[in-house]
Length: 144
Image (cartoon, rainbow, N blue to C red; front, side, top):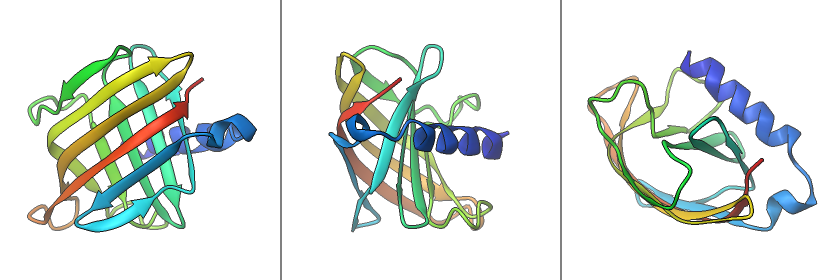
């Protein structure tokens, strides 16, 4: 299920790729290392936004369980929502990091453009004991 959602979001972002798509920015610190998406975008899926960014073979997907400005806390007991998924190499989709705690703050929603920050801890899907901090911001990202 997660692979299907990931692939659908990934393909949607690339299908939306146009001049307006790359006006904003999407950057992060992943376990202390700077990371900036070279391709990014967002889709509104019902009552949530899904923001996807890629750089080389790494992908970062953030799901915001709402469409209004505010802070969305990650609840590890809510198995229906994976707020953040980081895949270091999308050629190996079995090795990914899944958020376990933290929050996503949607600070601005204006004419289909999203701005906000995120601060989470994520566990590795293979080792399950390897937890890393992932923080960052997205600014002026176009959503459908």
